[in-house]
Image 1 (cartoon, rainbow, N blue to C red):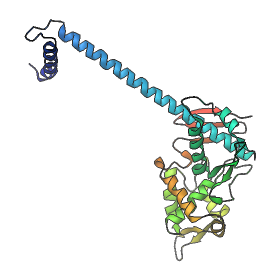
Image 2 (image 1 turned 90 degrees about the horizontal axis):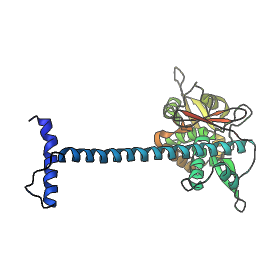
Image 3 (image 1 turned 120 degrees about the vertical axis):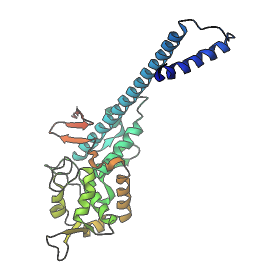
Length: 285
C-alpha cells in the first residue's frame, strides 16, 4: 500500500473501531458505506467551520473599516471647525458620527483626539463642561499652527516632533539625523508632503524662533545642527515634548500624518479621505 494511502486510512480505521466499541459492536465488520460516509461528514463539518471563520473575519474587517471611516470624518470635521474658529458641541459630533451598539461614541472620539494631537499637533479641549463644547488648541502650549489661506492644515505636530528629536539627541541634533528619523513617517527634505507641505522651508525660514539652524564649524560641505530657539524655550515644556515624542514613537510604524493609512486631500468644498487604497468623500455645509 502506498505511504500516502496508509496515512489517511489508519486514523479512519481507528476512529471506526472506537465508534464500534462505543456502540457495543466490537468485532462487527463495517458496512461498505462507513468510510465514505465518515469522510463526507468530516468534510462537511470542516467546510462549515471554514465558511464560519471567513464570515467572522469579513465581519471584523467590515467593522474596523467602518470605525476607521467614522474616525476620519470626525477628525476632518473638527479641523474644519478650527479653521472657522467655531466651537464644536458633543451633539454635533454625535449627529455626524451615528452611534450604534457596535460603535460607542467615546471610542471614536478618543481615537480622533489622539490623531489630532499626534498628527496635527492639536489638542481637543473642553471649554464648557455644562454644554459639552470643545475647541482645538495647539498642543504643548505652542502658539504657532501654520494655518493660513494657502495652508489649510495645522502643522504644529511637525514642529513638536522636531523639538522632540532635538531633545532625543541631548539638545542638539545633526540635520541629517533628524531627517533620517522623520523618513519613517514619509517626511523628506525637498519633497512635498500632503499635510506638511515643504518641511525644510519651516526649518530654514518659518521656525527661526523655534529652532536654531546652526552651521557646524569648519564643515565642508556645510552641515547644520538643530537646537531649540528662544520661542521654544519660552512656550514649551521639555517634559511634555518628550512625552509627546514617546507617544508618537510608540504607535505602529510611527505613523506621522498616518502616511500609510490616512491622508487628507483638501478641496474648497470637501475632504477626500484615502485609506488603505480606497477613497471616500465627505462634505460639510
